[in-house]
Length: 165
Image 1 (spheres, rainbow, N blue to C red):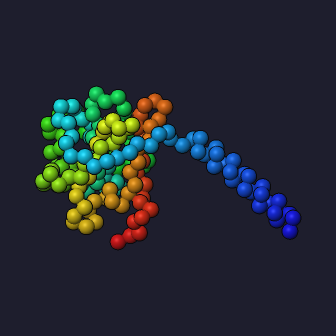
Image 2 (image 1 turned 90 degrees about the vertical axis):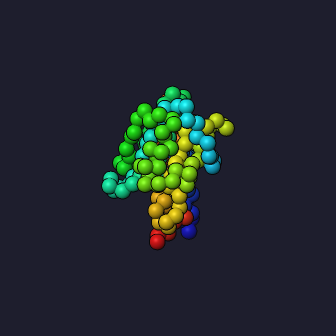
Image 3 (image 1 turned 90 degrees about the horizontal axis):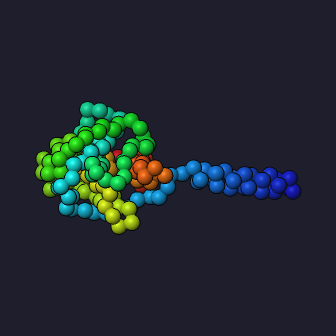
């Protein structure tokens, strides 16, 4: 009985040390998102389009990055399924995003501001949730992490709340 307890405590200590090491390798600050409606039209934007595995399908969501912004956005996980559209004029950015996402009425696009300490540093644009099953952003968790180089890593993982069709 004593040996089993010794193994369990040793395993527990090793697990805690492993978690400590892994957490020190994790990306930095996590950015927040909030609903947003008036994207500034004065900047040039770079559009990071995520389509997933299938290249032929319309984009699933777009991250709009101001061209002169203080942060550089980059796909982190997964590294495939991304397209980059550079130097889109601000007054055309939403119509280009709508066309890429396959949405005819850009007023129906879902726009969220990516925030850092209350400052808008970019925008996440996705199609409306109707028709059902179309909006991939509903089935994925999209997170933004700050690195030491002031780059914002975009991470896309399956949503833990989505359990199939």
